[in-house]
Length: 148
Image (cartoon, one colour):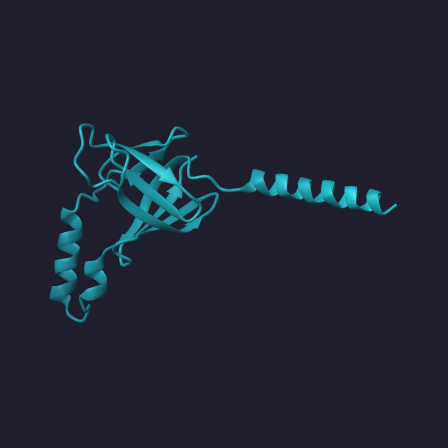
């Protein structure tokens, strides 16, 4: 009788783990950048309109115009960017990159040596949103929404 109960518990636990595994979020897919913060915003006091105008001017020059900024993570650990969103290193194809993903971090890799050139902490990953923070500059955060 005890063996039968243990067998049932093991099977039930395995089924629960399998179900949870199916529900795990993945970074693979297309993501659109909807908001980002920079270190400049956090350090500059927003008390005068001159400072606010300066920050607005700098944001407008940063290339975050009307075109949607989209990044696509593929199954084979490669990715593509519509503009420079994540990978800022110069390369042969500036809009393509290699990446490594773990549940806690996203690493951008050099194409030739496959060493880490940039790393991000994954603050949140859900079915419809992704929030990453630059691991070397905690004041740089990017918010993405998943495109269907």
